[in-house]
Length: 144
Image (cartoon, rainbow, N blue to C red; front, side, top):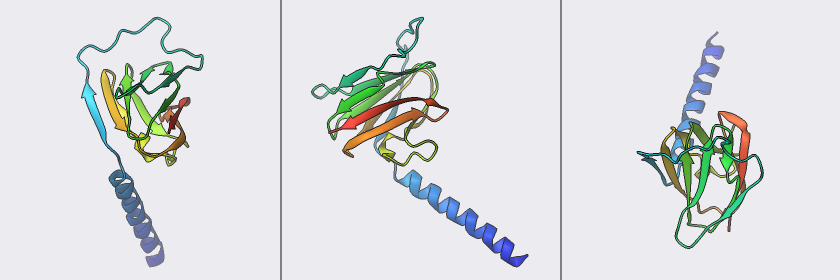
């Protein structure tokens, strides 16, 4: 019985340390309330693959609606900002689902409808992202 209690205590402590370290490994994210979110179209986000590339000094925008991300593929330079525009609630997260470990810079957590989040990306590579709440809604970010 004492051994079982000791194992449970170690698991709880280990889980707490893991959550603490994951929370401490977050990046430069900024949630911005939007007074007038962009209007929705009747079709929502496109189901066709779309891409966007970073322009000089401007953040790359990814819009989320209830039907998914648009564009669903973006490319930017290391140090550039990604702006997530949420027209519906989304939990923006790095692949793979559900552990979100490919690029922790992408783990913006919950973003409410009408909110924007700015993320500075520095880790180079190609990374998948998804809505943790609806993991079939996904896309790709390439950081050069």
